[in-house]
View 1 (cartoon, rainbow, N blue to C red):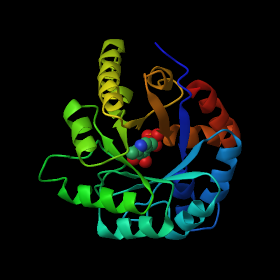
View 2: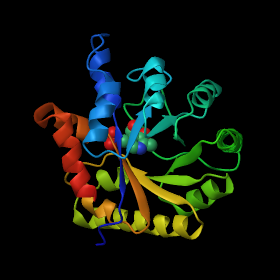
View 3: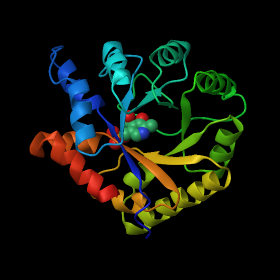
View 4: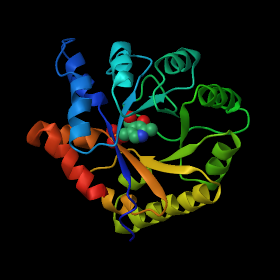
Length: 242
Ligand code: PXP
């Protein structure tokens, strides 16, 4: 296992807003959470503006994009979200698939020829606006190649199958799948990110994937922060990822 890639930690603060929206109140404030996460070692603040606005709201995003440091916005490839991204100008955008009924993102984008025409246009418009573009994909060679063909700067490999793997052998096989896709991304000149479902127990092998430059982690950090505080929860993850 290779650890020590100087992997950046992107902390997704959506679920701070989930808690606030439970009462439609003003606390806890995801913007304040972003500042605490940065102080505790987060390199990027990650947020997903969903079509149903179940957690992060437009006003949160506008404030997050004004903060110093990188804000990484996850969006569905739809005109409404593209317009918001172009207006707020986060440092980077990751295009993700989104189904309204899903509890969380369910897997990588469908980048088959027919499905990806609109994504190609969105990538072009975002890049023209100076925004770095990432595509959330399954760890498959075809998807990595398609992302490159669509002009992405970065691929974020979906780690759900690894995170949900039952037993060591299955987890090892899923890790190898991530590594192989990572090698290909590197060969093609793409930045390599990974994330989804990562926690304090399963993150280290993923942090050791060769050429990985960033991990995006949300739920496990926010869940742990309920017991130890956000600063400690981020700092603990920062240590595991370094
Ligand atoms: N990466 C992407 C593309 C995501 O959609 C999410 C969830 O918003 C994450 C990473 C973080 O996943 P988790 O909350 O399970 O750590």
